[in-house]
Image: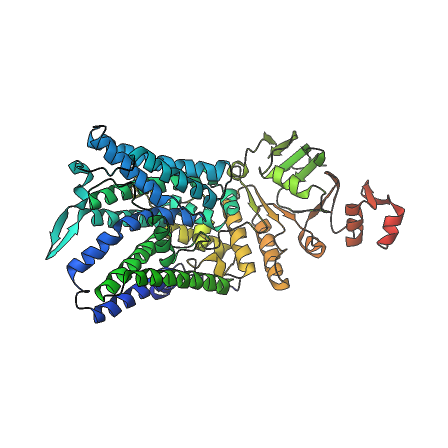
Length: 327
Length: 272
């Protein structure tokens, strides 16, 4: 506490280097460079548009996952909830004959409802998020198959597929869904970074007790986070339905864990309280770029899975080591 | 003789029971304006329960708390804070990954004026940084940057941030629970300096501490808690450290300002 002049700003380069996104961003750029050199098709508009389409569903799921992981929780059921939401909105519209708008609203509400239940179980009964969402994964998976009767829902109304349509930017077709995903990332970056709600989410992830003692209503905040995450899964369900054009009960099974992969690769700490949602976008893109680039190079897809796994372990190792150094 | 000033914070006959365990057994408490009052007591004497009752972290079963002479009842810590009572908790003061300015305003964020604040809920980070800088400067806490995360600070600096936050918001009382327990000699000295500055600005301080030298260095008065009650109020200038420890452990009792041997063996054992 030597008496020095307190400055209110850190220099911009130092702040950039200090963000948890710096590492993932460098990794993403290096990956792009590598695949650009090795494949002539990589650096083209249509290819980038394809990558974004491939990551938009899991990327959107990963927004909700980021919120929950920032509170030091985890959600193993996000893909299952999304699949159920997709079945609800398509089945209600096609089989039950509800107006598409109401069917969509019902799908979103069901997803938010599962988030709410998860949040209440975590806060009211103090169950570990891991266990709650593991149980919920099975419950929702079963409900999806029971309600859909294992049938894929087809011939969807236009409202449920409009996000899969494209508009032209130069020579490149971009889907409206990709645009919505990017908008969601920007929205949540703003909410987490520039509102009191966002600051409280970080404080909660740092230490629930500290947050409570500073007057933050931690129970209500946690339930809110899980519910908002559920709503985001509902939006992911709409993106999924518009991209595939069907309501598929088998969808989303790998997304439960892939969303966690994106969050972790984006530099967010699984211990909570540290990370940025834009990092998650970078993390999702890293996975997308590796899959796409390796495919362009003709590498068999099982090696893509292998490399993704190694990347995750590397990312968690870096997080753990940097925490140790800070201590 | 003039009438004594009203205590800022006062408690009478506080009782708190947990099943068969009595944490507070009719405890009294008086904090006078502008003083540093040390609360000492052996483990299990009810110091923590007393402080929690005074800061809203627990609700006493019976008894009365008065703030500036007015009866009050705190539902939770936030309620006590609204009444101008700020607490610096031992290890639970600050959110490590957030920066200093954010910590200073945690739970009391300032939004931008106009539509940006009301509709978009946008925080006024610049103003919060500036006000934080002003508070830190007032307490002569120098830091390189208010945007660095708190976890990059030393233990003493972190405690400094916690104290600065408490002082910034406290209109009546600052309560500090073992503020030097985790600190080295030099950093402890810095925190004691801070406590003096807080008192000199006119805000009374309640200091819970196990560290007798610190208590004797800084306290204007000492509240001795034993078996759930206040057993003595004394001035560190009139009593030796050994005497105070003896009162704390029950070997001596205070009567009419004089210490009286209560437990002869115990008194001998500590060399009185």
